[in-house]
Length: 339
Image (cartoon, rainbow, N blue to C red; front, side, top):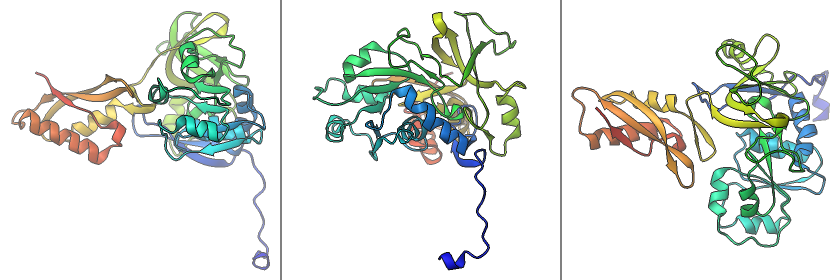
């Protein structure tokens, strides 16, 4: 093999070259392709361990899919950055959760609502868990899971945790923590661009160096890039928050038609567009219905077109069309017909 190399010249190391492309959840339209650079990866391995208190002795259990930034960056890069250990579980299992934690000496996990609801009520065996990373500080979760819960906020575009609570519990319950070192945050009126004072609800803007703290760009999508970034480098997250005392950030809602189904982002518009392709559907609105395990699930409220089939027939056709064209978690659980 070495003899066949010939005059091959290796590509020089360039931190800003793409290391991979990860797709967003498509909360407003089709998923966007996010370009992460080698420098983004290095940033995740540098700041991630500090965010979650990882050391070379840490063991992170990863059961979320690797098309999620949580699994790939928050978890994997953070642990690899300090030479720790990753335990990969192909699929989350409530019945084996504590068995796996104990058997592998797991010290860190990521939490989503489905996970803690699934293990709720199970006896907690003696274990080595030190930290569970969740979206917000929630003291009841610490009792439920038996370890410290760390708050963090981020998305595919911010590469890793753009906010963090730290290891010392110095942020108020319910908050997402404060801006992680390397990131700047602003709370802005999305209509006027006015920077808002503490306590007022506005859109969260995040700034870091593109290609390092935040993603480089959306692949082949100049229109989306122009909408996402301001001229002075602020990234518009689309999340509505308020700033509390001492810089703690509190989530209020997402400024998009997004449902959170068992930790997965679901665009109401995407589901509605699919429903509208079914003959007999005049108009439709998809909303979230409370679910004991998944937080919410999508359901469709439908206005029938003239000449539409019976309610039962049209509901079956809508659910079949969605099942054929959408991921399982995006399929409405029911269709209700209104005048």
